[in-house]
Length: 452
Image 1 (cartoon, rainbow, N blue to C red):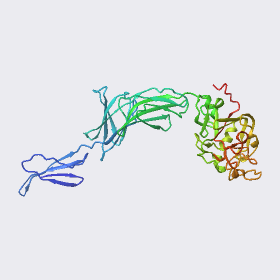
Image 2: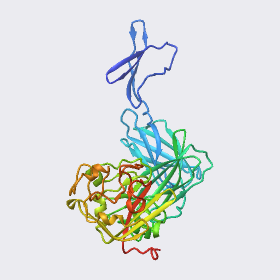
Image 3: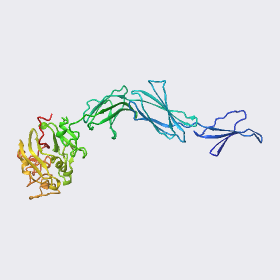
Image 4: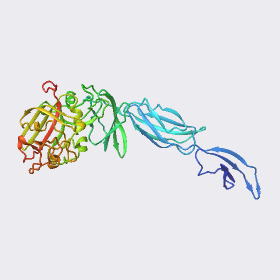
C-alpha cells in the first residue's frame, strides 16, 4: 500500500504485489508530498518506507511580446498558481543560433524588457519557473524586431514614413510619440505603405513604430526617429503667420491666439485669395447650418469650418485686437463674383456688445458695410441698442444691425423674399439671396508681395 500526504490530507493507493512502481496523478505543481510505502500480508503490515518528493513548478502562461522596436521588446506573462523562487528567461536570434542569453528574475516578476537586440531579426524566447532546484517546462514564443527607416519630407509640423514588406498584412498601425507625451496611433488599410504624419510640434523629437496586422496579431515592421524642423512662427496667432511658415494650401489650421501657453484653436485659412494669409470667420455656401442663433451661440461660434460656420465673436474680438487688421468679404452668385476690402476692421469686447469698427473700403461689391460701422452685435435674444424694430428677429440672423441693414450675410439661406436672405444691397439688392459669402481678416501690415 502507498500513502501520499499534502497539507495533512492523506490519499491511499493499493498496488499489486508484483508491481514495483506506480504513477501518481492529479498532483499539484510545485508542491511537496510525503510518500509512505508499506507491504501487507494478511493482517500483518511492514514498517513504513517514507520519502519526501517535490513536483516541478508550473510554467507561466499567456506569454506575449509587445512594444517591439528595432532593438527592444517587452515580454509579459501570467504567473502560474503557487509561489516560485524565480523566472528564467532565455532568448536567442536566428543570426546567432549557437548563442542563448539567459536571465534570472525574481519570482514575482510579470514582465521583462529585452534590450540590445539586432534590427530586422527573428528571436525565439522561452520562459520557465524555478522552485528550489526544480525547473518547469518552458513556454515559448517568437518575434521579429523592426527595421529602421528614415523619415522623409520632415517639416515643422509633418513628416512622411514609408515602409516595404514581403508579407501581406490586412492592415497597418502607425504609432508615433513625441518625447514625454502620450502616443498616438493611426490604422491604415492594406496596401497603403506610406503615411504623412501631421499636426506635429516644431523642433521636437518623435519616435515612430509601424506594425502589420494579420489575423488579429500585430508585428512590428519598421521604426523611425526624427526631429521636426524649426518654424518662423512655431505657435502662429493667425493665418498670415502660418503662411509665412510655408503653408501654401487653404484649409483647417491650428492657431494659438494667446501664444504657446494659451488654448489652441482650429480655424480655416485662405492661403490663395489676394496673396493669402486670411483667417476666415464666416462662410455661407449650402444652407446646411442654421444662423438664426442666440447671443451665446454667436459668442462661442458654430458650424463646420470646411463648410458653413461663424468663428465666434469672442475669438473674433481677441484676434482683431492684436494689432491693425484688414477685412475682406468675397461674394459669388452664379458666375458673378465681387469683393469688398476694408483697411480697418475690429470687433470690440462683449462688454461693448462686440461693436463693429470698419472703414477704408476698396473693391467691386460696393461699400455696404459702412452703414454698420459703430453698431453693436445683436441676435434674436439680445438687441443691445434698438432703433425701432427688433432687426435680428425681423431678418432672421445675427449681425451688426442698425435700422436695419445694408448687409445681412447671416440671413436665411436661399430666401429671395421679405428681405430675409443673404444680402449685400450695393451689389445684388435686397431681394436676391447670395449663394456664397466668405468673411476673412489678416494683419494690415501683411504684404502679399513679400510674404515669401
